[in-house]
View 1: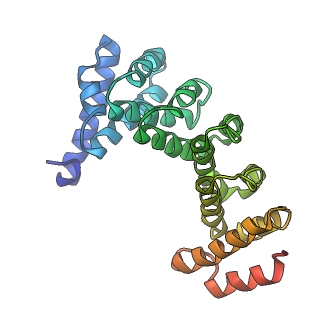
View 2: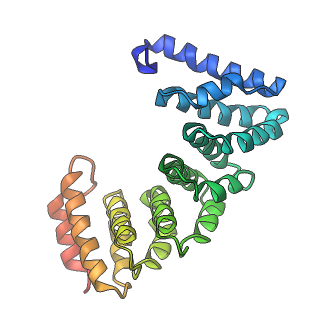
Length: 253
């Protein structure tokens, strides 16, 4: 039976049990149940495990070193789900204490399994939203990495911060405008679109794009912005017609 096959009260009880078990193992320096939760086939069991680790780290100062030691062990596990859970847990900690977990992301960016690398993207998103200073500084180190997948992951990872503070990431996105890899350019255009339909963001995005030199990419990005306003018409601040009118008036090519 999966986590979401349970009733609301049962789910709450399971989540509390997971947290209690992990906390006890941290105190006794055991990993049996923790490993079981972090490798569970049910995504939501693993999610409750990494959320619990983040919560324990925040609430139990005396266990912080034990948690970092545990995460170091989890990152070396042969099971990709365990490594994925490790990075997601590090992401919970990094939302307010990034420096202590930065090395996990330095390693996981190069993990052989896509699930672990995707956890890096998700973690950078949530950390960048809550703790942008050190996270964006870290991300910049990899913005022009020789590995195209690293560049793509960093580009995608900084997206969430851009949805509320586009000015923080648009200069970084601009540096990718001449990237020769289609996969990176496609992610770049996707991120611009995801930023532009949010409240107060379109004007900032257009102002930035007007300064870009790669007009081919700008044309594609403007098309994506129009399409996003149409696809997400129930969530966008502006209607497709209003967005198109703004673009026509203020975008320069």
